[in-house]
Image (tube, rainbow, N blue to C red; front, side, top):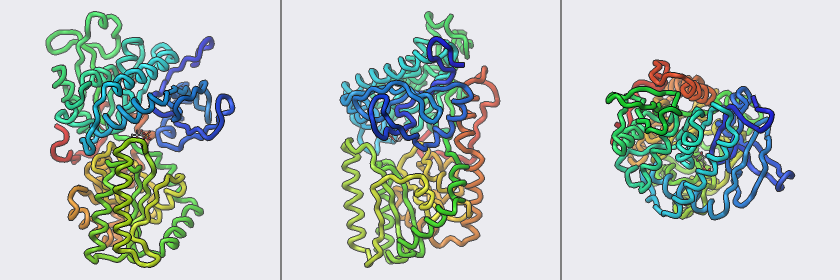
Length: 510
Ligand code: F6P
């Protein structure tokens, strides 16, 4: 319950961004729109039930908003100055950690002033949580922008139950060890009771980093963190004795593959207006025999250029014409002030115009490139219209687009081509799995998808749907909170709910 004298909460969610977008106005006149992300859908019911609050940045520099309520959720905005947006968000988060954690696809930049800003901003988020968390409250911290927060919380408030979930990959130690602040980040994460990752391989990489940097004992998903003198009395939960007889606390580090609000996508896919829009989209595109679709943030991790190269070569080989097969590529603008993103945009746009210049037919450009974001309704119409969905990420924590496509295909049709480097490939085994670096392999998968008989399409899609519908984001958040509040980290209920034949790509994981 909220305490009467000051606002205190039993459940505190902390993420870089608030789950709302600012529409207009300032101060009390500010108007907000709830962003339709899956995380909000998953956490909304739990937040109501447990009296929750969400702490995050409102997405604009240099603005101060008082705490407010949107659609029944209490929100606490954390302000960032323009300089902090540059150094903490664009710099350390998205030009150091993001490329480092995505296998250095783009070279990470290491700047000490960015690190200073990262620490300062993490402290601000931690302080905001410390102030509003009720005694013994649950604080659930999200993602790579806030990895120092768990330790800051534990140092100030050992009574709290602290969870952390990393939405992006955690890299192998050979890559992670580049980070000049690798120890501080690992220590920050070890402040949590439960550290969640997307894949088995990510959790393994983290445990290995802990062993390499600290030599702490690990047993399966459990890490034994030795307790120092000052921490002995304060540590009540997950206290035990280590193999060498010294007092420890255990940290559970395991995968919790995130998902989507699958019912919501099914519902939208059944809407007659959205179905009509899907038919209209195909007509607007000149009724191609096959419609292929890519939907991504314009990010170098997504393998957009690789898929375009494969598509362009197939046009060149004469495998099909631009009249027969159309590719719609939605590339929503993202982190545009970071150099690597601006450069990627140029490269992709040059590629699109070259391929279209060489292979378009009047009224049939090969690639329909849309540098815009769209509402969820339009996305579902696109998913319904598309015969083939292309997810060719070079590295991706999960890739929810793959799951959205599957959940939308209530007609049990459509083919998903999915990169083995996306977390979703651990679960979505009946997709056509590809290595996007292998352009010939990617071309073969596209041809296979185009020619796939109806029976095989249905068989595969049915199996994919079974997985996505039974493992939705509501189940994900319930599983995480269950693990977080369970007394014993050794409880066999901490089983891993991931298909057994999961194989991590070579060189990734233990
Ligand atoms: O997947 C990581 C993530 O940070 C998400 O949390 C977020 O929705 C997405 O990338 C977009 O990032 P940004 O907040 O930088 O626009």
